[in-house]
Amino acid sequence: MNLITFAIGDIHGCFDRLQSLLAACDRIGAGRRARFILVGDYIDRGPDSKLVLDFLIRRQINRGDRFVCLRGHHEEMLTRAADKYRSDRDLMAWWGNGGEQTLESYGVDDPSDLPPKHLDWMRSLPLQTIDPHRLFVHAGIRPGVALSSQATGDLLWIREPFLSSEEDHGVLVVHGHTPTAFESRTCGQTN
Image (cartoon, rainbow, N blue to C red):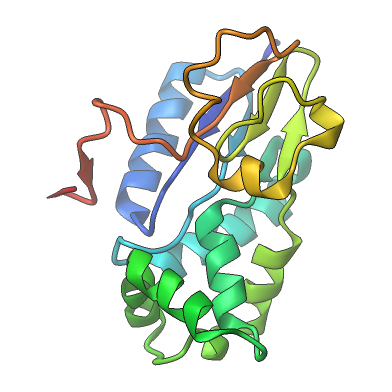
């Protein structure tokens, strides 16, 4: 049986949508062995960041290399905001990008009060994974830079010049991060 790969990006605390999407993937897979690669931004903005992380951590443990979670810039911002040596700028940057909803989902007032298991898991997430034909990252890559030399900031944040590049990167770059016209709502609310 052939392995089918599903890439999922930018869940943003929307547990119900994640469940619906995984169910749709199961239907599409029609019994084939499936591999899921989630390209980051599991938290913030939506109401259920805690449920999303609980689910992803369990699923990753149970399915190993068939359920890969990568780090997105929202996980990066949260782990910086939760650090005891954080700057006010780090805290406010995260909070202003949906962090308040994440705190509400955990019932805490400070990101440093999130469960250490969740913070450690986010810190441990890889920035990329590759198969023979595809590179999976959160945001994209810097055109003209070798894949092995990509900067963390680009993997997590880049839009341009990556999005408009017509350069052959040697692999298909599968990413999330940048909203599309299709992605018009978050957890049932207009962006």
